[in-house]
Image 1 (tube, rainbow, N blue to C red):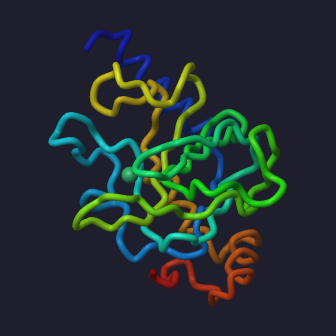
Image 2 (image 1 turned 90 degrees about the vertical axis):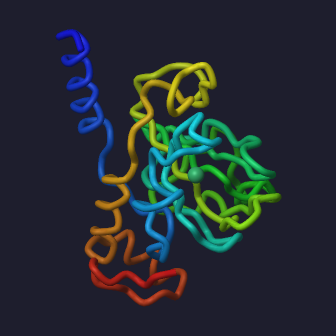
Length: 206
Ligand SMILES: [Zn+2]
């Protein structure tokens, strides 16, 4: 690897640190199936090894509310995999693609261009139609640093087939879960959906 490449890689890490502030976990509970493992994890093989999984899969029943991880503006709400939609939100410097959400419309009052607040409900978990032997209800969660340009999906690029500023969301989701129960907003969220307020290490599993 050339010195230039080493430098630009480390600059990307720095940019990621600066660009991604504290996130709110997008569900009001910790998924029972870890997004660190198996097919759910970032970088897992897809399409018989022809590409890598570009996000973390947060399993939750279809219809489960999804909350904005930070303040932002809705960029796109459009077709995604297997009769689901993806909701892209510009969170001010970084982008989250909340993938595999319900295609049956956004919550009342929201449309492309709308401002959303951290913790506001922005979508519902969708249902993937036509999968066999796999869980079919989840948020497919993708994170972008915001310094890329063009569409998030980039079939011409190797490995992930995504834009160059794609990031591994795992540590950011971990931090969001750790903070749940410690900060005001997640507590509010959890009480809104009637779930018990957990300790950081013992969120209700689902
Ligand atoms: Zn996925």
